[in-house]
Image (cartoon, rainbow, N blue to C red; front, side, top):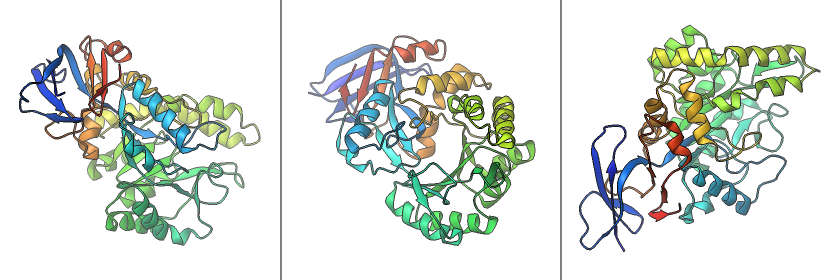
Length: 356
Protein backbone atom coordinates (compact mmCIF):
# COMPACT_ATOMS: atom_id res chain seq x y z
CA UNK A 1 0.00 0.00 0.00
CA UNK A 2 1.30 3.51 -0.76
CA UNK A 3 2.53 5.40 2.27
CA UNK A 4 2.78 9.08 3.20
CA UNK A 5 5.81 10.50 5.00
CA UNK A 6 5.87 13.97 6.55
CA UNK A 7 8.46 15.70 8.66
CA UNK A 8 11.11 18.41 8.54
CA UNK A 9 14.03 18.84 6.15
CA UNK A 10 16.96 19.47 8.52
CA UNK A 11 18.97 21.30 5.85
CA UNK A 12 16.29 23.92 5.13
CA UNK A 13 14.09 23.73 8.22
CA UNK A 14 11.07 23.49 5.94
CA UNK A 15 8.23 20.96 6.09
CA UNK A 16 8.80 17.91 3.90
CA UNK A 17 6.03 15.69 2.59
CA UNK A 18 6.13 12.89 0.04
CA UNK A 19 4.64 9.53 -0.80
CA UNK A 20 6.21 6.11 -1.43
CA UNK A 21 4.86 3.40 -3.67
CA UNK A 22 6.65 0.31 -5.02
CA UNK A 23 9.93 1.52 -3.51
CA UNK A 24 9.86 4.88 -5.31
CA UNK A 25 9.26 8.42 -4.02
CA UNK A 26 6.47 10.57 -5.40
CA UNK A 27 6.23 14.26 -4.59
CA UNK A 28 2.62 14.17 -5.84
CA UNK A 29 -0.05 12.94 -3.46
CA UNK A 30 -1.10 9.33 -3.95
CA UNK A 31 -4.76 8.76 -3.22
CA UNK A 32 -5.48 6.21 -0.51
CA UNK A 33 -1.99 6.28 0.99
CA UNK A 34 -1.71 5.58 4.70
CA UNK A 35 0.43 7.87 6.83
CA UNK A 36 3.56 6.04 7.92
CA UNK A 37 5.40 8.99 9.49
CA UNK A 38 4.08 12.38 10.56
CA UNK A 39 6.84 14.23 12.38
CA UNK A 40 10.57 14.09 12.97
CA UNK A 41 13.46 15.01 10.71
CA UNK A 42 13.90 13.22 7.39
CA UNK A 43 17.37 12.83 5.82
CA UNK A 44 18.27 11.17 2.50
CA UNK A 45 19.94 7.80 2.99
CA UNK A 46 23.54 8.26 4.11
CA UNK A 47 26.35 7.81 1.60
CA UNK A 48 29.62 5.99 2.24
CA UNK A 49 31.77 7.31 -0.58
CA UNK A 50 34.69 4.94 0.15
CA UNK A 51 33.60 1.43 1.03
CA UNK A 52 34.62 -2.13 0.11
CA UNK A 53 31.73 -4.53 0.63
CA UNK A 54 33.79 -7.16 -1.18
CA UNK A 55 36.62 -7.01 1.39
CA UNK A 56 36.82 -8.20 4.99
CA UNK A 57 39.77 -8.99 7.30
CA UNK A 58 41.43 -12.33 6.64
CA UNK A 59 38.57 -13.46 4.49
CA UNK A 60 38.12 -14.31 0.84
CA UNK A 61 34.67 -12.75 0.60
CA UNK A 62 31.83 -14.61 -1.10
CA UNK A 63 28.79 -12.81 -2.47
CA UNK A 64 26.75 -13.98 0.53
CA UNK A 65 29.33 -12.59 2.92
CA UNK A 66 29.36 -9.34 0.96
CA UNK A 67 25.58 -9.24 1.32
CA UNK A 68 25.93 -9.52 5.09
CA UNK A 69 28.45 -6.66 5.14
CA UNK A 70 26.09 -4.55 3.04
CA UNK A 71 23.27 -5.24 5.51
CA UNK A 72 25.60 -4.12 8.31
CA UNK A 73 26.11 -0.80 6.52
CA UNK A 74 22.36 -0.41 5.97
CA UNK A 75 21.72 -0.88 9.70
CA UNK A 76 23.96 2.16 10.25
CA UNK A 77 21.92 4.22 7.78
CA UNK A 78 24.22 3.85 4.73
CA UNK A 79 21.92 3.47 1.74
CA UNK A 80 24.33 4.43 -1.05
CA UNK A 81 27.88 3.06 -1.39
CA UNK A 82 30.63 4.03 -3.76
CA UNK A 83 32.58 0.77 -3.75
CA UNK A 84 36.07 1.89 -4.70
CA UNK A 85 37.69 -1.44 -5.51
CA UNK A 86 36.77 -5.02 -4.72
CA UNK A 87 38.10 -8.44 -5.74
CA UNK A 88 34.47 -9.64 -5.73
CA UNK A 89 31.90 -8.54 -8.30
CA UNK A 90 29.07 -7.34 -6.07
CA UNK A 91 26.61 -6.58 -8.89
CA UNK A 92 24.34 -9.48 -7.77
CA UNK A 93 23.49 -7.39 -4.69
CA UNK A 94 21.68 -4.90 -6.93
CA UNK A 95 18.72 -7.28 -7.03
CA UNK A 96 18.34 -7.24 -3.23
CA UNK A 97 16.08 -4.37 -2.07
CA UNK A 98 17.52 -4.67 1.45
CA UNK A 99 20.96 -3.64 0.17
CA UNK A 100 22.18 -0.11 -0.47
CA UNK A 101 22.48 1.27 -3.95
CA UNK A 102 26.00 0.87 -5.35
CA UNK A 103 28.35 2.71 -7.67
CA UNK A 104 31.44 0.60 -8.31
CA UNK A 105 35.00 1.14 -9.50
CA UNK A 106 35.73 -2.44 -10.54
CA UNK A 107 38.98 -3.84 -9.15
CA UNK A 108 41.91 -1.86 -7.78
CA UNK A 109 44.68 -1.38 -10.35
CA UNK A 110 48.19 -1.76 -8.92
CA UNK A 111 51.66 -3.13 -9.62
CA UNK A 112 53.14 -6.47 -8.48
CA UNK A 113 54.07 -6.42 -4.77
CA UNK A 114 52.84 -2.81 -4.52
CA UNK A 115 49.47 -3.38 -2.89
CA UNK A 116 47.58 -5.85 -0.73
CA UNK A 117 47.93 -9.31 -2.20
CA UNK A 118 45.02 -10.61 -4.32
CA UNK A 119 42.95 -7.44 -3.88
CA UNK A 120 43.40 -5.99 -7.35
CA UNK A 121 44.76 -6.32 -10.87
CA UNK A 122 48.57 -6.22 -10.81
CA UNK A 123 50.18 -4.90 -14.00
CA UNK A 124 53.59 -6.27 -14.91
CA UNK A 125 53.89 -3.57 -17.58
CA UNK A 126 52.87 -0.16 -16.19
CA UNK A 127 52.48 1.17 -19.72
CA UNK A 128 49.32 -0.97 -20.00
CA UNK A 129 47.64 1.13 -17.29
CA UNK A 130 45.34 2.98 -19.71
CA UNK A 131 44.21 -0.30 -21.28
CA UNK A 132 43.36 -1.73 -17.84
CA UNK A 133 41.57 1.47 -16.85
CA UNK A 134 39.33 1.02 -19.88
CA UNK A 135 38.65 -2.60 -18.84
CA UNK A 136 37.73 -1.65 -15.27
CA UNK A 137 35.60 1.26 -16.47
CA UNK A 138 33.49 -1.23 -18.39
CA UNK A 139 33.30 -3.53 -15.34
CA UNK A 140 32.20 -0.82 -12.91
CA UNK A 141 29.42 1.71 -12.58
CA UNK A 142 31.10 4.92 -13.62
CA UNK A 143 34.31 4.84 -11.57
CA UNK A 144 37.86 3.46 -11.80
CA UNK A 145 40.29 3.22 -8.87
CA UNK A 146 44.06 2.88 -9.02
CA UNK A 147 46.67 2.65 -6.31
CA UNK A 148 48.69 5.84 -6.48
CA UNK A 149 51.26 5.03 -3.81
CA UNK A 150 52.22 2.11 -1.59
CA UNK A 151 55.31 0.93 0.25
CA UNK A 152 58.20 0.03 -2.04
CA UNK A 153 60.17 -2.45 0.03
CA UNK A 154 63.28 -1.91 -2.06
CA UNK A 155 63.49 1.65 -0.69
CA UNK A 156 61.52 1.12 2.51
CA UNK A 157 58.96 3.88 2.12
CA UNK A 158 55.86 5.01 0.26
CA UNK A 159 56.55 5.58 -3.44
CA UNK A 160 54.40 6.35 -6.51
CA UNK A 161 53.43 3.43 -8.74
CA UNK A 162 53.05 5.35 -12.02
CA UNK A 163 54.69 8.06 -14.13
CA UNK A 164 52.94 11.27 -15.08
CA UNK A 165 52.57 10.09 -18.66
CA UNK A 166 50.93 6.86 -17.53
CA UNK A 167 48.55 8.81 -15.29
CA UNK A 168 47.63 11.23 -18.09
CA UNK A 169 46.77 8.26 -20.30
CA UNK A 170 44.76 6.66 -17.48
CA UNK A 171 42.61 9.77 -16.98
CA UNK A 172 41.97 10.02 -20.72
CA UNK A 173 41.02 6.32 -20.90
CA UNK A 174 38.60 6.62 -17.98
CA UNK A 175 36.87 9.66 -19.41
CA UNK A 176 36.72 8.18 -22.92
CA UNK A 177 34.92 5.18 -21.41
CA UNK A 178 32.38 7.26 -19.52
CA UNK A 179 33.96 6.84 -16.09
CA UNK A 180 35.52 9.05 -13.47
CA UNK A 181 38.84 8.10 -11.91
CA UNK A 182 40.15 8.18 -8.37
CA UNK A 183 43.36 7.16 -6.63
CA UNK A 184 44.46 5.79 -3.30
CA UNK A 185 47.21 8.09 -1.99
CA UNK A 186 48.60 8.11 1.56
CA UNK A 187 51.78 10.15 1.17
CA UNK A 188 53.13 13.21 -0.61
CA UNK A 189 55.27 12.00 -3.51
CA UNK A 190 52.47 10.70 -5.74
CA UNK A 191 50.16 13.67 -5.31
CA UNK A 192 51.66 16.26 -7.71
CA UNK A 193 51.31 13.98 -10.74
CA UNK A 194 47.85 12.73 -9.75
CA UNK A 195 46.56 16.26 -9.21
CA UNK A 196 48.32 17.45 -12.37
CA UNK A 197 46.80 14.64 -14.40
CA UNK A 198 43.33 15.85 -13.40
CA UNK A 199 41.91 12.94 -11.41
CA UNK A 200 38.27 13.38 -10.43
CA UNK A 201 38.88 12.59 -6.77
CA UNK A 202 41.56 11.41 -4.39
CA UNK A 203 41.17 9.01 -1.47
CA UNK A 204 42.89 9.55 1.93
CA UNK A 205 45.25 12.35 0.79
CA UNK A 206 46.95 13.01 4.14
CA UNK A 207 50.15 14.14 2.36
CA UNK A 208 48.69 17.32 0.86
CA UNK A 209 50.49 20.66 0.85
CA UNK A 210 49.04 24.14 0.34
CA UNK A 211 50.08 24.46 -3.32
CA UNK A 212 48.35 21.20 -4.16
CA UNK A 213 45.27 22.26 -2.22
CA UNK A 214 44.97 25.34 -4.41
CA UNK A 215 45.34 23.21 -7.53
CA UNK A 216 42.68 20.77 -6.30
CA UNK A 217 40.30 23.71 -5.87
CA UNK A 218 41.14 25.03 -9.33
CA UNK A 219 40.59 21.64 -10.95
CA UNK A 220 37.57 20.80 -8.73
CA UNK A 221 39.14 17.54 -7.53
CA UNK A 222 37.09 16.06 -4.69
CA UNK A 223 38.58 14.54 -1.54
CA UNK A 224 37.36 11.55 0.46
CA UNK A 225 39.69 11.68 3.49
CA UNK A 226 38.59 8.50 5.34
CA UNK A 227 39.43 10.04 8.71
CA UNK A 228 38.68 6.96 10.78
CA UNK A 229 41.12 5.07 8.55
CA UNK A 230 43.75 7.76 9.22
CA UNK A 231 43.47 6.77 12.89
CA UNK A 232 44.99 3.37 12.02
CA UNK A 233 48.29 4.91 10.82
CA UNK A 234 50.05 4.65 14.23
CA UNK A 235 49.18 0.94 14.41
CA UNK A 236 50.42 0.42 10.85
CA UNK A 237 53.67 2.18 11.80
CA UNK A 238 54.05 0.09 14.96
CA UNK A 239 54.07 -3.05 12.83
CA UNK A 240 56.70 -1.76 10.37
CA UNK A 241 59.93 -1.96 12.36
CA UNK A 242 61.79 -3.36 9.32
CA UNK A 243 61.12 -0.12 7.43
CA UNK A 244 62.04 2.83 9.68
CA UNK A 245 61.61 5.46 6.95
CA UNK A 246 58.11 4.21 6.16
CA UNK A 247 57.37 3.95 9.86
CA UNK A 248 58.37 7.57 10.44
CA UNK A 249 56.46 8.72 7.36
CA UNK A 250 53.21 7.06 8.47
CA UNK A 251 53.52 8.63 11.91
CA UNK A 252 54.16 12.03 10.36
CA UNK A 253 51.17 11.68 8.03
CA UNK A 254 48.99 10.81 11.00
CA UNK A 255 50.25 13.76 13.03
CA UNK A 256 49.53 16.31 10.30
CA UNK A 257 46.66 14.63 8.45
CA UNK A 258 43.67 16.28 10.11
CA UNK A 259 45.30 19.70 9.99
CA UNK A 260 46.04 19.54 6.26
CA UNK A 261 42.61 18.14 5.41
CA UNK A 262 41.08 20.93 7.47
CA UNK A 263 43.06 23.43 5.38
CA UNK A 264 41.74 21.78 2.22
CA UNK A 265 38.20 22.27 3.53
CA UNK A 266 38.89 25.91 4.33
CA UNK A 267 40.25 26.46 0.82
CA UNK A 268 37.12 25.04 -0.79
CA UNK A 269 38.04 21.45 -1.68
CA UNK A 270 34.85 19.39 -1.79
CA UNK A 271 35.00 16.77 0.97
CA UNK A 272 32.78 13.71 1.27
CA UNK A 273 32.40 11.05 3.94
CA UNK A 274 33.94 7.63 3.40
CA UNK A 275 34.84 5.00 5.99
CA UNK A 276 37.18 2.68 4.04
CA UNK A 277 35.15 -0.19 5.46
CA UNK A 278 36.69 -3.55 4.61
CA UNK A 279 40.12 -4.72 5.66
CA UNK A 280 40.92 -3.10 9.00
CA UNK A 281 37.79 -0.89 9.28
CA UNK A 282 34.51 -2.55 10.23
CA UNK A 283 31.40 -1.96 8.19
CA UNK A 284 28.62 0.16 9.64
CA UNK A 285 30.77 3.08 10.85
CA UNK A 286 29.46 5.95 8.72
CA UNK A 287 28.34 7.95 11.75
CA UNK A 288 31.85 7.69 13.21
CA UNK A 289 33.16 9.27 10.00
CA UNK A 290 30.54 12.02 10.17
CA UNK A 291 31.63 12.76 13.74
CA UNK A 292 35.26 12.84 12.60
CA UNK A 293 34.44 15.40 9.91
CA UNK A 294 33.39 17.86 12.60
CA UNK A 295 36.95 17.55 13.93
CA UNK A 296 38.36 19.18 10.77
CA UNK A 297 36.06 22.16 10.94
CA UNK A 298 32.75 21.12 9.42
CA UNK A 299 29.66 22.04 11.39
CA UNK A 300 27.35 19.18 12.35
CA UNK A 301 24.98 20.15 9.53
CA UNK A 302 27.86 20.33 7.01
CA UNK A 303 29.14 16.93 8.14
CA UNK A 304 25.72 15.35 7.64
CA UNK A 305 25.49 16.99 4.22
CA UNK A 306 28.95 15.55 3.37
CA UNK A 307 27.44 12.11 3.94
CA UNK A 308 24.07 12.65 2.27
CA UNK A 309 23.01 15.48 -0.04
CA UNK A 310 26.56 16.46 -1.05
CA UNK A 311 27.83 13.10 -2.33
CA UNK A 312 24.44 12.29 -3.84
CA UNK A 313 24.71 15.42 -5.97
CA UNK A 314 28.34 14.58 -6.79
CA UNK A 315 27.56 10.99 -7.71
CA UNK A 316 24.36 11.79 -9.56
CA UNK A 317 22.04 9.73 -7.34
CA UNK A 318 18.91 11.54 -6.22
CA UNK A 319 17.92 11.73 -2.57
CA UNK A 320 14.39 12.73 -1.63
CA UNK A 321 13.08 13.59 -5.06
CA UNK A 322 10.30 12.58 -7.39
CA UNK A 323 11.07 9.22 -8.99
CA UNK A 324 14.06 8.44 -6.73
CA UNK A 325 14.48 5.16 -4.93
CA UNK A 326 12.91 5.54 -1.48
CA UNK A 327 16.03 5.54 0.73
CA UNK A 328 15.93 7.81 3.77
CA UNK A 329 16.17 8.07 7.55
CA UNK A 330 13.58 9.39 9.97
CA UNK A 331 15.21 10.93 13.05
CA UNK A 332 13.99 12.06 16.45
CA UNK A 333 16.07 15.26 16.51
CA UNK A 334 17.67 17.73 14.15
CA UNK A 335 21.07 16.19 13.25
CA UNK A 336 22.45 19.68 12.71
CA UNK A 337 21.95 20.22 16.43
CA UNK A 338 22.50 16.66 17.71
CA UNK A 339 24.59 14.25 15.65
CA UNK A 340 23.83 11.43 18.08
CA UNK A 341 20.33 11.19 16.57
CA UNK A 342 21.97 9.42 13.61
CA UNK A 343 22.86 6.55 15.95
CA UNK A 344 19.22 5.97 16.92
CA UNK A 345 17.10 6.46 13.78
CA UNK A 346 13.38 6.09 14.33
CA UNK A 347 13.13 4.49 10.90
CA UNK A 348 15.58 3.39 8.21
CA UNK A 349 13.68 3.14 4.94
CA UNK A 350 15.55 1.15 2.29
CA UNK A 351 13.98 0.82 -1.15
CA UNK A 352 10.64 1.78 0.38
CA UNK A 353 10.74 -0.78 3.22
CA UNK A 354 10.99 0.31 6.85
CA UNK A 355 13.84 -1.73 8.31
CA UNK A 356 13.87 -0.07 11.72
